[in-house]
Length: 431
Ligand SMILES: Cc1cc2nc3c(=O)[nH]c(=O)nc-3n(C[C@H](O)[C@H](O)[C@H](O)COP(=O)(O)OP(=O)(O)OC[C@H]3O[C@@H](n4cnc5c(N)ncnc54)[C@H](O)[C@@H]3O)c2cc1C
Image (cartoon, rainbow, N blue to C red; front, side, top):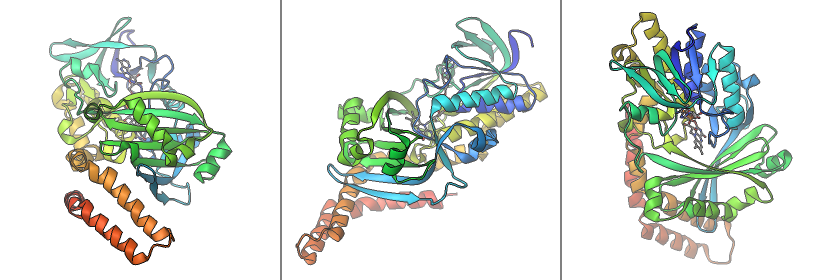
């Protein structure tokens, strides 16, 4: 290999970049994967779950060999009022054919990069790409803090705030409406206590979404995931909402973790980590041009996140794979022009990435408009309805039913739910 020229350079060794690099290396092409981190994954913030389907397409052996934390056997929605909570839980009573696993990014990213190296990918850690090299209207390589490297194709996988995509005019500056801020704390609890507390067997785990309570009346959602002997607890909130509400992220975090229905999960657990990171507020209309002469953009850098379903890593891996396949085709044709690389966009259109982002194009706007209904009214009415059923407090049932009925009417929840119901039905019926 010419020291400074290679067929493909991939910038960023997150899920998107590693998937692109592995796909290309498996076809026998030369690929250099660079990342600014000393220890890959150490600074990559994540909740969270990886999903079996897309992961297995890149890492055939991951179920047997990867550093997985727990198989998600319970998906939970915790609806908080100021004082109470109502949980909706969906349990799979087996971890066979599990659709999602929690991972810890520092261990997971390291394992992924090792798999890439085994496939023949050249990996360069501690390599910060400062800019892309551009000649005659085509991207021809990268400039790092050390030197210049040339390639036929560069794949940009540098994450949510992609400076490189901005540099070549494929993306605009991010605004408050384009991203959510995510705050996460990690707590350590001995494995057995964690399993008792979350009522799971060994290696099984819980993924919870948290609505309302301290996060009410704003576009924000909490999350809680179980790892082997740690719990990840946090929330994502729209940056424009944070500004509007004039509340500091750490104040929200304090309120969330001291809510009685949340505090019980982390009681006596050792606090070990605090981190913050942005996630794109993905939608079809926000997708930038994702290819040009000699270049493609994948993963968060292209805004491929489905916030409604908490999907980011799977779309990152899939887009990396599709860009990798396109790169192989272009190299074999000896043509890396935008017209050949446009095949990447066609592949995206046929995949769940663009199909799902189209389905949810207006969902966040609709949820934001109805946020009070979703985060305040629903949790409060659920709590009240269940109290009526559950509490033998000596008040005649007819009085309690009357009060509940009146509260439902007064709240306007029925009228408010109609547009939401119609919106949801349209999404289901749309092809
Ligand atoms: C708190 C939180 C919880 C989440 N939970 C989930 C979840 O449960 N499920 C899910 O699917 N997704 C989740 N996500 C989203 C998911 O993490 C992202 O969608 C996914 O990591 C995107 O992968 P990526 O490879 O595009 O980018 P990243 O993972 O951000 O990787 C980008 C890489 O590029 C490197 N880099 C950046 N700039 C440069 C440069 N100039 N030079 C060299 N290297 C560079 C970085 O070091 C990094 O390694 C969560 C995110 C957060 C913040």
